[in-house]
Image (cartoon, rainbow, N blue to C red; front, side):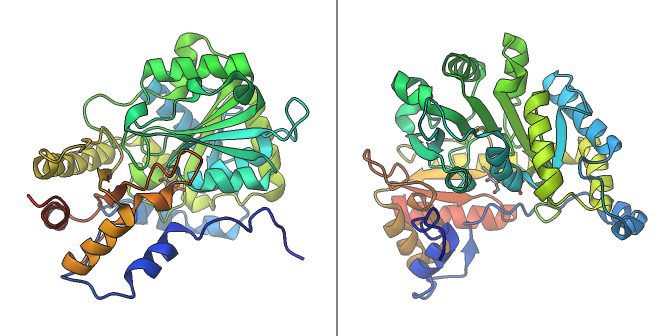
Length: 393
Ligand SMILES: Cc1ncc(COP(=O)(O)O)c(C=O)c1O
């Protein structure tokens, strides 16, 4: 026998994309703009720090993270958000945010709320682990549209009170993948108030927080502190994958209220895989250094500017505020991705692969997601081909 709860998961986006495109020949030199894998260089000293600490592979690493790493993370939160969290009780290193986003549901989602299976609310489109975590804890997912009409962030406040009363967890991604929208103070303030009124917890996926233009995005924990919200209402997730161009390092953290973190830590002590010690050591150095993050941001800014220049006249083009994706409006995302591949060799992801079909339709259907991770020249070439092929300009 096998469990049913994962049986109706759609195939993951990338196998679906391969099935769509790879039966056809590329219509030009191939430009990959599908996967959000950072390609800018990571700091040159990373290798040296790993080598200096290689003996650490000979020991079981501390599950909760070294005090030095937790301290470096707490200091980063203080510098970035002006929030002083307790490094011992409010911070926990993760093997990247994905596992943390998954395991947080295990640690924090109650079995029932109001006598029924709880709801887990999430944006639609969304990062797919939110839905799998929901299925794993036997909760019911509710996909809340994040569309042009809602400013590309989910309007949780528009849901009926009885739905909100059933919600136990709310996943929210800001800066948002794929749209690049950023939740502002007002958004967080009203979401925190909603969480208090309807007694749910916010899982804030902020892994794109350091890739932005203009002002740095405010954070959920920051607004919680500013508004005097209960710190147990919100848990934040951050990563070195995007900030430091180290998706292969598998290093991030979760921070939030002491009771939420105690529960996450306890579960992880039984079932989690702690970060190898050399990775903890280098992570500590990375969180303490902003110079490489600023350089990285400047590289993305150049690409944002190229995108604005190329798509500025395309109706519905949304200049991304943050993150590294373009969320481009098209008539049909799958048809557009196929046409692009066959006519130009550019690979992009149909928006529908990142979102779910609901009674209100599939909010990703009329979009393609384009990752701005390739070198500048290649990105410019790819974007120009997209514009010429799909928008005829
Ligand atoms: C929205 C979002 N959340 C979380 C992750 C996971 O990142 P990591 O596990 O590398 O920190 C990604 C990665 O692409 C993402 O796009």
